[in-house]
Length: 286
Image 1 (tube, helix red, strand yellow):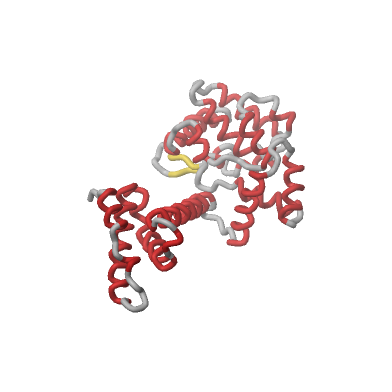
Image 2: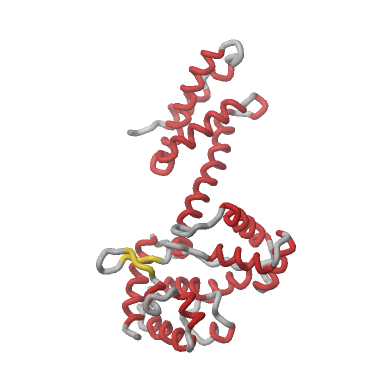
């Protein structure tokens, strides 16, 4: 169904809703309120039906809240509603990204709030300080022990589900489980007797990639192992992404697969295919 934005803008602006005394003419006010909710819903779908249609309940809630709280001092009603919806939609998208990030993990709401606060403060801090200095600043700002700040940084680095790819059998597989048998890459690196050998395997597989694939794979690998890299190790291998590593060391933030896909103007499925190619080369290094 096609929605006409101008039509609904006109219906909203010409609505008699706010000229009705809601106390004395309760029935009329209620009737026009229902019509206004419908107009606002159709108006948003006219703007972006694909993005907004799944959120009919949230649109209705925002519309009701705006109708109940609006008065002439707040200016034009449609502007008032648009501002409220923009804020609500931002919250919806934030929660959606958060759910994708922590998919399959049991993260308490307290931890999620703390991570959101950590991210907000980290972005406001000086960008030229080392990670340990940043953690000390955040510790004071959040009134938390440094150990807790490091925990929040690690939680913020989690990207469950975003490091998967579709294998040849059509099944979703974990990228980093493949690097050392069935071990998680973090556990693998911590437990490895010879970390240098693992890094050399990654380097050899990386060098055999096509040039156009290298930047994406570089960012992806570095995002997964940057918390374990020493400065000496980072300087020895060409597969290390300097930009990803620098961002992590400055503010403790690690890009997700979605971030990397957006950086290169690709979709996540395309990134998965590139990583799949890399894995095949990596497994030949075994």
